Image: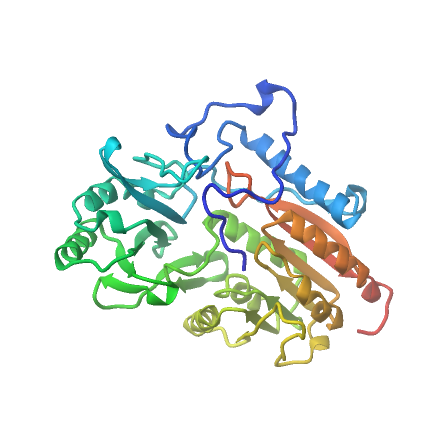
Length: 413
């Protein structure tokens, strides 16, 4: 599971421009506060040039860190989706700035710790962007307006797959009084979002409004007939269209058949595990966080999927976790790790019977490092490409497919 980058953060290495011609690499930013806002830093570069830069960075990392030149694998066409109003989850900052007229709500600025003076957003999905102005008015009227530094925002989908109900999680550093709680409830009743309070760590999150009903939003994978639930604090891929297309590509790269057994490492809430379970015999998903394992099992049950099982295990420990089946019984492996990569899981992969491994990455540098180790263990890179999960940012999502040289040579699994 690859946690989303915080707005204003930078990847390990930034893409170099693919062209020295300003006429082909510059365009007019769509956002009124682009110069200051750290939410996305490349609106001044055309989309095609952004993709070319990300592909070049991926290939450069594979060549320099893994010793794998572009001539030895297929460069996949980029997975793309909407360039605007695509982001269904984000962390916004809030701060009282009296010289600017009150509380600001938005992404942090590119430089320094200031909050961008935003009234709208071109990359947030419409239901979230529409809440920025009302949120500013709400916080300005609260007694505790200086005690709310952060707001997590998330949007779910209705049954038609359109962005629908939103959720807000307000981090507050001191208790909120009765009047402020009433203001929050009235705001939620008028504008429609679920509202949660977070007085401490993640475990302290509790819903304020509505009072009853499941604490869940949902998104849909219509090609697979699935409806997946998530808590507003859960990780999920922020770009719904690119996520669906990424699942399709991963399924294609794995080339799953009915008799295949898949091991899904860093499975999260079952984003890949559950749709892929409809294509093979069995899926075992492993995730570090127990609450996400519980969410994956909940989603499997809700969707009637009986050939997928999930377990919580530390995938970074020295010894691999105990599996329901021996490692050699899995002939396909999928991994989708955080930015730090998955070096610790490679002995498990090497001990498996997998003849094909698909690696979904949010950091080309750690992917290249792990590709070098996979190659040393007998897995050759066959194809790789970028997935434009975060248009107008420096963040590079990618996917790579490896095949076992042992299996191709005809050795017994």
